Length: 136
Image (cartoon, rainbow, N blue to C red):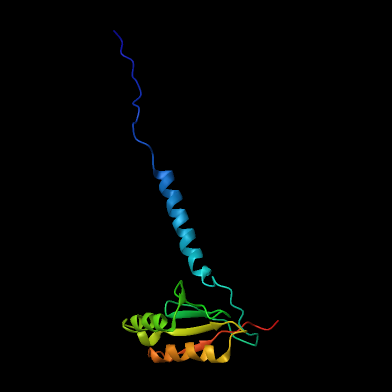
């Protein structure tokens, strides 16, 4: 009696292509996430300006013409909430390395911009710059 060799069937699903796809999507999201920083509509004033070089110690605070404050993806912050978040950031090890950019709408009152500026100063940060759009 002759025996036939039967091929083994595998009951497992090969997940290698799935893992490749997941890692590819993860890399895409990691690259594009920092580019999504300007999520609210703010029109800073136009003037001659240098480009912002962002790093881990660069923080941007947005203020719309309706006085809506956004900091680190949190919208509608009050001055007290902004101060609290800045104080939490101040407790970190390298708090002296932080550089703040205040991106305020051109139609916002000057006094409102100064209020946010003073809140950042009150938290103990000294390196603050105002963001403008480059003239065309």
